[in-house]
Image 1 (cartoon, rainbow, N blue to C red):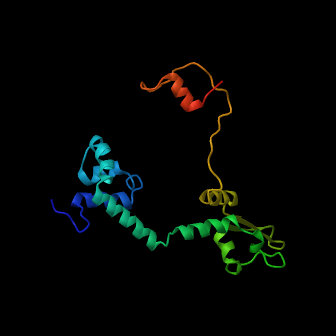
Image 2: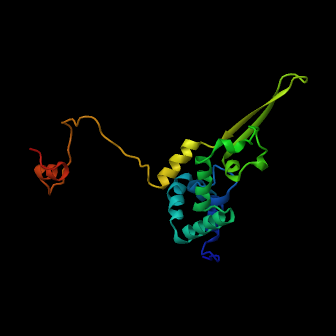
Image 3: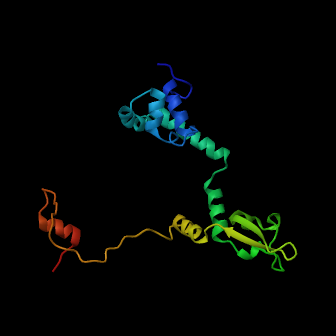
Length: 192
């Protein structure tokens, strides 16, 4: 079977191209659908073989290489993502206005404020003789951005607490080589 420079067979190459760049959102990223199209397989066969093909070393290496290539081309880096989230998290709404309280033109706003900006809506209200403009500014979710940064800095973790009583009854599975008393001591400590 012939392989290309990436170590892929022609059908593997079609599978990879569909998986990462199909114009059909039902196909892109769907191993089963891509496998069916590339190999002419049944749904049942594709269900097992599509995900399995993603684990093939040549396929996995090719897809990872293409992902990294796309990230570099789009300048997607951890640093840039953090800068964008930080712009929203640390936004000072005063940056949208000049010293007299007038809304600045977007080009005159500080860069951080522009990065946090999600929408500006200007609406004319009133008659032609007495017309006024109402401006509405919407920026990114400050609370959500702060939570993302806190999670990144490990300042915020998901913790599950059990506040209720532990009920007795039901089934307890204890390894055969461990006595119930030993298992309880290991998991609950000594209870007196």
